[in-house]
Image (cartoon, rainbow, N blue to C red; front, side, top):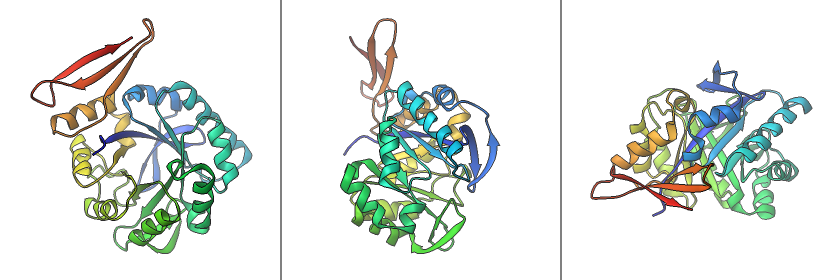
Length: 281
């Protein structure tokens, strides 16, 4: 079994980092995304997801987001996954040239499922993440950040997206987003057990134990947005908690810029919380 990935998420509105609850913006941090990612320990992350949730796409707002993508890609060594307003293979091409490693599609794929096949055929399924946002009470998938209800049930849409070429799924619900009460494990687990691609759980993390619960419910990766802003070095703390719970997580990498060394923090000894550092020149 592959080690679990731990992924902080940046939600961006017109280039500013924001926090959301039930998919509505509740706090504007007025911070640069690169600086914000550094504060929660992006070097400890296995990946960073940046989602443009700006309500209207204009040439100006898109240029702002593309600048964010470029600067994030230049600043970090970890893979960068980006999404928001992606509606064509050409949009993907622009973001990949700016340094993105993967892209997230949602509304455009629901409007035109053939887009999933086109992107995965051109770039490979490993590049494509399909976001599945759904309502817990009805099981219906919604588009446009919960502004448009679809006829799809979450299980059917997840399976269909994978059949068309999605290489990964990103799950979220209106009820869990920003709630701090944990992932909706029953629904998420049912998807994770039914598809043959990695599944990322997102929405609802209020304490690190929620990440542990997600891992045990079948997540390939656990993601969190709001919680990353409340604790210094959030990803490192999350991984330490998961190690203590006996979970296999990817090593923490520390870069020593002065000496040009990479230090890998690994587990050692009889207990998973026995930490040591191994240096590589």
